[in-house]
Figure 1 (spheres, rainbow, N blue to C red):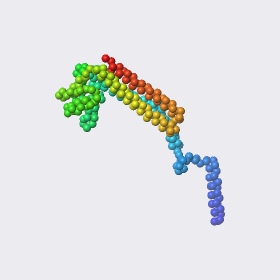
Figure 2: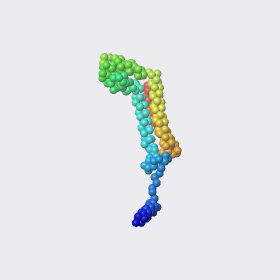
Figure 3: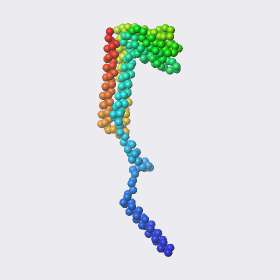
Figure 4: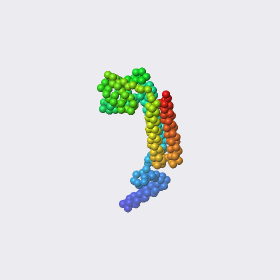
Length: 239
């Protein structure tokens, strides 16, 4: 009896082995790809992540927005270069030290005109009169502020031909700073394109196409600054 039971057990084990082999032939085991380290399987999601795409349309838009800000900054600075009559925007660049930090003059005072040749500055806090006077004197605007009680008066003399030429030179310097800023934006985005090429997100041909396109964008915004400069020079040199 014991011998018969041992034989039966061996037969059952052998049949189970044959069934397993038959199952494996019909339903082969799915092998997962193995990472280069040989330790962990590389999942399909991980494989897809390695082939990310480069959004040139969005990248180009971001570059254009930054370059437009450079143009707007230059145009704002041009407004501070006076043309004839007194204008509160002449003082836009004046920074005043108060409350432990530097603040724009128009944020801490009321600025108005008194006739075509005089500006009147009234600080909200009368304790800042001296600080405002000093800030205007050191702002390289060639203006001489005069304290008059609780206000500061700034007489704006008529422009001489020599002074007009000096201001035109100042405008050219500002415009050159703006074009340098635009070129710096281009440099940063060229680096993004090269990084995308290095990471195999784009090919060499696409990289060149995108860089050429970026150069055209750069030229367009540089021309905007040149056009703004020409208009400012015309105003400054007009007698």
